[in-house]
Length: 547
Image 1 (tube, rainbow, N blue to C red):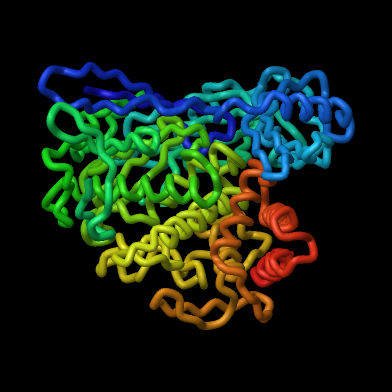
Image 2 (cartoon, rainbow, N blue to C red):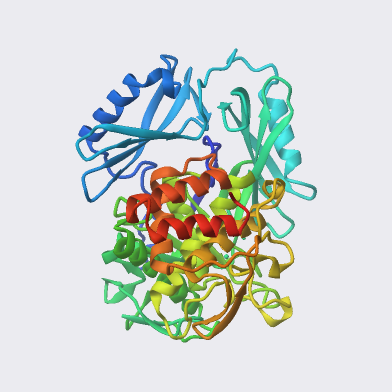
């Protein structure tokens, strides 16, 4: 039962594969095709909150840069326990999507306007909405950005207003997709000036790096399954229908920007509801890890942050395991609301189905439904760091003795031949020889997986403090950039501050300076402006040179 992936270019979309599925259940076969993911918006927002926010925007239009040429749609509404509301909008100008047009309106419990956060200040107007550079030129530019030796490459271009990179200007947002020499999908988004053709920014369009069941990394774990026809499906009805399928070591066959799977992702079934053997010899073992990671991530967001599913709408995601041959990656695709895991090459990585990888990748889904941090520059580093931070907290939340929580990213999947103990190190990110410990003016020029080090370092310091210490049997040594001593406030408070900052205050263009402001606002909301927690957030940012 095949499925197809169609690459599109949504405004500042972090992952761009829009997936449509067709399936017919044949007699005597397991249902194998993925179900449609949720709609792009979460649950219907409160009409009263939206009405109050609309009225506030009308009353403060001049100050907030709201003009008749703009239109807006509600992306999300966050409700506080005290009745406060935070309404998040996307905006268009003259019908064109605006990168940096997102804003959040904050309302007091009684509905009074208390302020707003914007990705871009001022009017979003551009002198013309007619491009001087044709779409074909933008598409060719994006195809070149994929690099050499890419097969079946094609691109789609969308005209947008770019308000993230200085004065608003007309731009082409173009996503190119193709295949590398192994047949694995690659995609790159190029933002170019529609008047001059100059490149403004580029970013990856597929986000990377990543009964009971005997798992590969987490021991024997509980799993909820669905009884069907005398057997069981690895589909969890208690968590929005989350399920896991076998990609059968196939990859997506792409012709230009159209990709069709060369094999169905076959839903795993089992006769006795005891899944896997704990070894790679049984294909269900990797499925156990993937399903377990999805379950724990769901539980973390629901039980800790009150978020019902990754999109906040109660709908589950799904997993594909055994993707490709020796594929050293895992990735989240927001448009299909799914995770895909490679088996690794056995030398660099083993199967990329560890718990922190699952938490990391699925947290990209949370980011895409909230702040939608652009996947380039400093906001791209914050996007990656958000997944590292929340994925780490998922691992600690699981409290699994076979995979204790730690501040190492991907330590389970790394093979001895790789020469490192982990992919990334939150206590001192530069241990990987590439990541930044401290902010500098050039940090936004690094790959987002390395510029994320600044926020990862901040998060470790905020939770655990500076200096040498042992946490869960692992020794960490976290220096500060200014020689200061930082006292941590614990992981629970780190998670509360970061999640509120992400979902209430951060926007698509948030920089490190903006992240400091957002987390201080969150700390004020949660603990008070004069609290020890507020002071700790400020001290931790200063300790990584974000002042």
